[in-house]
Length: 171
Image (cartoon, rainbow, N blue to C red; front, top):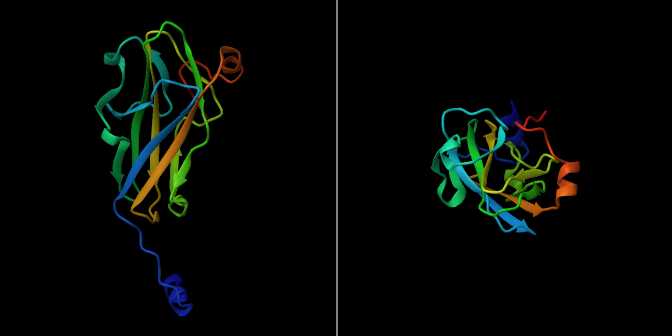
């Protein structure tokens, strides 16, 4: 019925793209370390956020090269964000809400990520990680979507005010 209504109005029905290339980009403000993306090993708990001493302790498989992957409409992908602190002082940061490009492809896209109004800490000589998930609705339309987060460095006092409990749970 909807297709008939669209055609009679002179509009062609929109077809879902399959698959879409998803690219995750990062910008940094007052922050020198970089976020890396990895395939999840097994099926770790969504939003699990921890710091560990060695890379071997991470729930990761292979690295997501070029921070991109393809995803079909109706599918979801769970992966792991990783940041290393090789220094002797803790690092404090938060992520500003993500931006998408092209914006018209953002309908039907959901990213359970790290821009959740929390500050994060990476201890000295530790490796921090967060398990995230990106979903495309069945009706997602588009062949590519770029998602950009800005990581912003902050001081210890501000981090304490906005920090989340160890173990990382969000509602």
